[in-house]
Length: 84
Image (cartoon, rainbow, N blue to C red; front, side, top):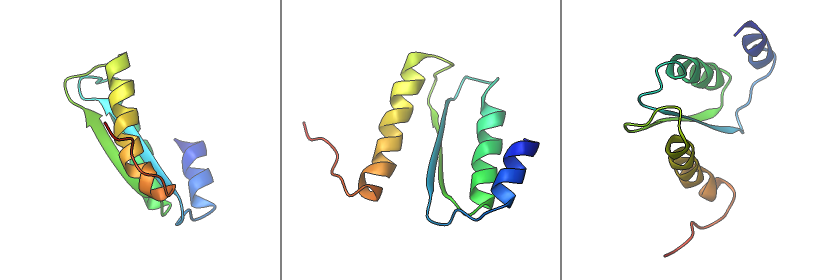
């Protein structure tokens, strides 16, 4: 975390959005994602942290995480979510 903290402390990222996702059963990665989200928030980013329910370090956690990220990013990018 030291390089990350040094990088984030050197500049404020007030116009940046960050999305951190992880499977709720992925005990090995949850602490790191929480630390990353906290560091990004402390650096001024607008942060979303989301856990994919009942998933581990598996493909559904990735695809569900991307779905959640797109909900946050669509308006940020001036896009509309797909319909249907």
